[in-house]
Image (cartoon, rainbow, N blue to C red; front, side, top):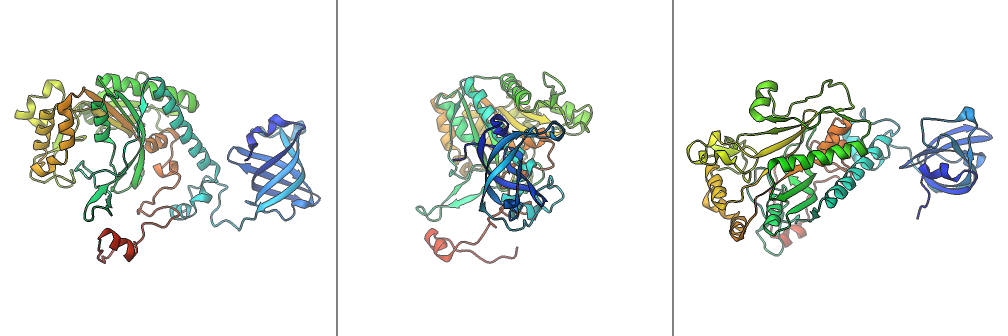
Length: 466
């Protein structure tokens, strides 16, 4: 196992070390040859002789040498290893590298996205992309530690689940054991996390993978994404917002010290207020939108529970009802507006809260319905048939056994980091994203199944023009 990372080399001055990594650059001065050796933690200069003549950039090498202080005039303050260099005593070329099909010595924004995704394993070598993956890992670790200290339990919920009409198109998975029936990949753990509240878990979280067959855009990846899923019992909206604010304020302070949150506590703005003032429910409240270090968090609350429904608004709707859920069908109405469900549903406010950062919605949540009668009424209003409502029978039955009031929030990790880092797309924060056309990076998917696979599943396909 590799015992020494590049960033640690300054701790070993005057000691002989073994260093493993890639050749970043080579500078040949005939009798003296300089290499910059790279691993994911940085680069360090190696000074060698003609034994380095056959080394090329991106070769994987093992360097044996002595760590020496650089002369004062040659110190490079721009890198963490700038005060030292390695005097080589031996080199082993572990793996030769062919010329790269894409450059990796720039930030990469200028390179065609299709080429970057095809060679994503090379694209990830660039410093910006490595930094993004490191910050993503640190962010998830911070979240886990923060919530665990506050008595949350991390619970994994199923990836193979049941198709239910929740608003977006499901990805379906055919069942081999039950031919003609299908699993669905979860759009979110929404129903499972509510059932965990019935189970008495009280404080749940999960770094959850979610799957939706929706068109991509710069702030939404195609097919799948990652969200921090949080659910709590016996809470108010203010409890949820305060916890979220504490979590991300602490995280920014520790992991993004060059960023400054422009206003604390975060503004809480009603939906009607932001629409009237800004013309959007996700306003960018930065004082200077050209300042990349400014973070303007805010909350948008008091959304209408319903919007006017059309087939486009609500994919699974029957098209016969007048109303569609503004957030989702499990959002609780404001307690003061419950009676309006019978008389004027469009005036009902939902207990929904959207988390906004620099003009992006980076999370959404609500207080949930925990009364089966109110849930059934909402199903009726959005036009669910009796058969559609039966798909949620498991939840309605669970609610009959004693369910606490509960609510939560689900910030999107990809979109949150995109906004924090000022990246142009969520795909810059995902190791192997699908392209904007739905093509899976590196693997060249989707692809056809074999006739044998289809026969085993009891499925036939038809040829269509794409």
